[in-house]
Amino acid sequence: MKTNFDEKVSENLIHHTMTEVLDILLIDRTTSTKKKTKNIIWGNDNYIHFGADKYSALSQIKSELLTGYMKDLILPRSMKNKQLQKNRTKKNGEVFTPTWIVKKQNDLIEQEYKNDTLLDYIQRIWLEVTAGEAPYMVTRYDMETGYPIDLHKRVGFLDRKLQRINMSINDKIEWHNLVLIAYKSSYGFEWNGDSLLLARENLIYSYQEYYIDKWKTLPSIDNLKEIANIISYNVFQMDGLTCTIPFSSIEQKNVEMQLSLQLFDDEEKLDDIEKVVKKTGKRVKIMDWEKEKLVYFDERIK
Image 1 (spheres, helix red, strand yellow):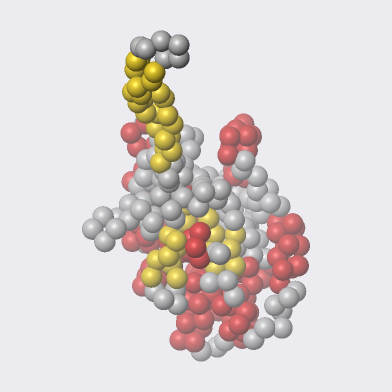
Image 2 (image 1 turned 30 degrees about the vertical axis):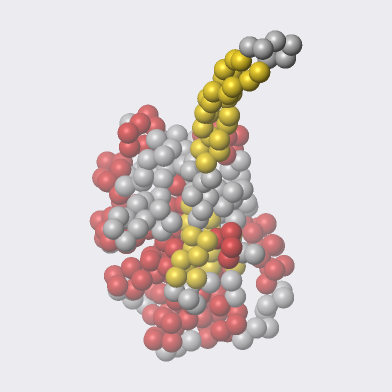
């Protein structure tokens, strides 16, 4: 099934026109170090039939695995077959919210802040939990049908920030600086790596679309890389129940020998004692943009 949406969210399009941007969008900032960059993981086994060594739930998503002849591998939920949608709902609790509900909920929250100054409004921190493809952040298309939504009718909280900036600012440098603030104050997390990548792509495409709407030209590759960098920190992979990287918590069964004295006799006996030791998962870090340093997510939200 093809829709107008196909050409807009395409890893292949990004890969061919802005390779460095896709590479940034795939980075996992929690597991990466100064010496080694690591990517987000698939987070599910939906693609394992293409090869367990590269497409297992724990495997990192690499650009070469989803471009070229694999360009249609990752599809939005609306374009996945019904059985796969059902399986993902059953296994991962994946349920996407219709746009009209997104609008109603964001409208309700926004009522409290509508009279903010432009700067106060755009720097207010919002977080979309279990974000999926990030419709609460940017509603580029309808979650049920996949049809594109007109730029001026979008209702995500980042959409609203960008719409106010476009309406209020006519200086290009000031526009750019305020857009950076808007992105830095907008967060979201998701378990599934494929959905997370779509969410990140939706944010980078939204930037490009609002830029074109305002300035009637394409943004520079440097601008896109700057926005992609922010997105890679702010829209991240996480198990929302533990605030850790998915699958990083491990249960290990250790068998220990314990010396025991049997009641009513003088015999000593060695007993096998099985203990389950749970290894704490890798805590997710996010960027504190005021301090310009990574902080633990579970501490930041307290």
